[in-house]
Length: 503
Ligand SMILES: Nc1ncnc2c1ncn2[C@@H]1O[C@H](COP(=O)(O)OP(=O)(O)OP(=O)(O)O)[C@@H](O)[C@H]1O
Ligand SMILES: [Mg+2]
Image 1 (cartoon, rainbow, N blue to C red):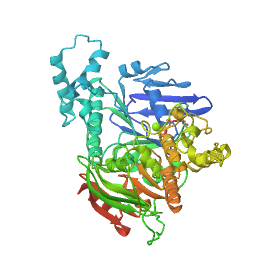
Image 2 (image 1 turned 90 degrees about the vertical axis):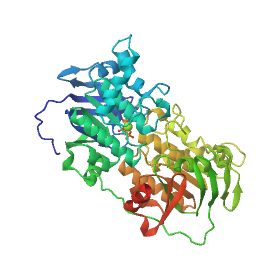
Image 3 (image 1 turned 180 degrees about the vertical axis):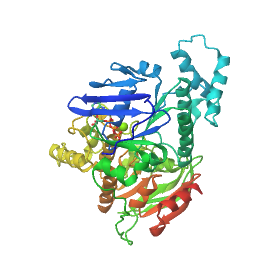
Image 4 (image 1 turned 30 degrees about the horizontal axis):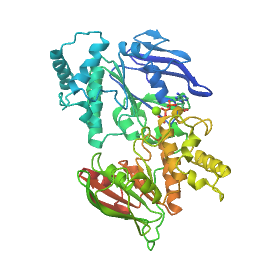
């Protein structure tokens, strides 16, 4: 095990021997970690290894069963969320906890005023305070915009500014780049560099290994609630991180099955149009084919998928399934026509969080599980659940565990299982492996290949170039609501995809 060189600087925050159990599940088993000022410390590890739980403990949202959090040399064994904030620990949550109907300036400054019990905040002081921070981070944020109107990236930057108003010395970001474009990621990284220069200690969680290597100075790799290794980022590469995470080698090779060129298309999309979203979109997908659709965030790629699934129907144009025109005005129309959709935002769409994994898996496919007397075929339901639970390697004690108890990446697998259980003719997946660790990503792509081999037509919407390269027969590039390029065969490389996306 590589140990980090002895640090000359004192950690801003250290955790010692943290253990945390949820019922029978040991989420953390004796985790220790130092966060140094001016360093980005990356936590890497497979889905469910305990990264988010560790963050919740550092930020006082969860109490550890044993172990302590030490801030500036003072041990806290009963820290709560408020005392964490007072001690300078800030988490940039994925929903950013911002007030949508207040302005950027108000969001940056006001909660700090309230937390500081300065009840008589003066509106006049809000803008200058916000301005100072926005300028220091060299951000191009309009202080007077309502936060509800901002892009995800700008909301995130607003949340980071707010953290600085709280005099944050530790800033924690759990998968902050999942909803960002390449350009936005670059902008976030520039901000992170400025935070570092200010001496802030940052914790960064991401499943994108290139990002981990680009942004962090120190890397800690966890597996099953323990630290496997920790050291300088410069001592790692993609391969070694993946190997420490999974205990096996990383395989990202391109693997696409031969297609039956004579087969009639499963799905034909013809001149689909939705003013303000996309224009004149036409393409087809054969049985067995995996079609990639890529483009920057806001390019219209998600809107096209939502139109095919009836969530936001197109204004004009036609969709055909197996040669028959499908009039898709709503989600039930799409489901009846044999279309499945795995949404981008796995937690707000598509899952019943309080229900079990098992219930969620079969929720959409009960009609397929009836016997010839129209009663539910319980044995078949159990077999479907057990099969998908193990094929997708969902990390939970058993299928009866509630979805709420799953880690992010495992919840994503349940959404996928739910749609695979319906055996749709056409399956549209929006970011199928967002938040999924590198090892499991390969397994999920393999499941898609198998589903395609059974004759499904699959559309993968993704901006993860290696993923598209690994599984797609063709890739469509969408920009400003139009299909601008179609790549096939040898043209499908990460370089060409990035180049065409940016063009
Ligand atoms: N509230 C909870 N109740 C029960 N189990 C939980 C709870 N929160 C987390 N767990 C379990 O603790 C383990 C660690 O989960 P955690 O969310 O920390 O993983 P993670 O490393 O963040 O994974 P991911 O990369 O998928 O986000 C998992 O087995 C998870 O199912
Ligand atoms: Mg997590």
